[in-house]
Length: 249
Image (cartoon, rainbow, N blue to C red):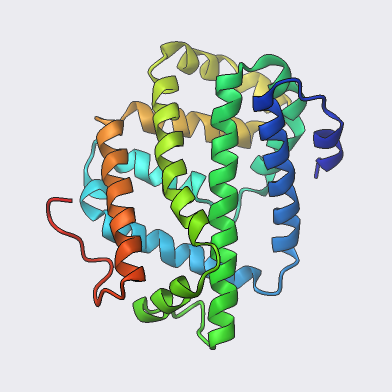
């Protein structure tokens, strides 16, 4: 991995320094997670939560105007495994990012990194709580999930996770409305392959395509955020059916 390159790069703006620190934090967490005895259990937790999100937001997930965006969120942004090369390549190109990208794009990348980091930290904590309770992460029930959730010491991070989804989603939507970005992604496919950055380029292109296909990103984000905030309140209030939401929400 490329930690030394991250440390050695001069970050001249506040946005660059924020991204640099988040990449360092994420780099160190990935190494910790890879060596953690419950790493596979954390992957199972992430899989369970991805399915729960699909179920809670089934109407949006099945909607042709939102399906691709939610699929990108669950398979790319919320990616517990299989993205090691992509993440390594972000570290690798960081010196060029801070040299060529404007601060607003660096801020968006920082939000993506922070969202991914917090999500994986929360999944690992749940895996540890399940282990302490003698619950198999491969056979999670709603009741066991809610018990572990309420014992979490990272509830403030869970609130921030929801806020980050809104912030990052709105920022990404602004960028994909610029057709120049799509042209640049098409033009840089060849150079990305030559530089062994195909996985990173594909990630960016999938995100661009997914958001371009969505009908109303602001409406989608508003519904996701309000629903997940209600789910969080339901769990903390010991609601008997925490994932059941009002039809108008």
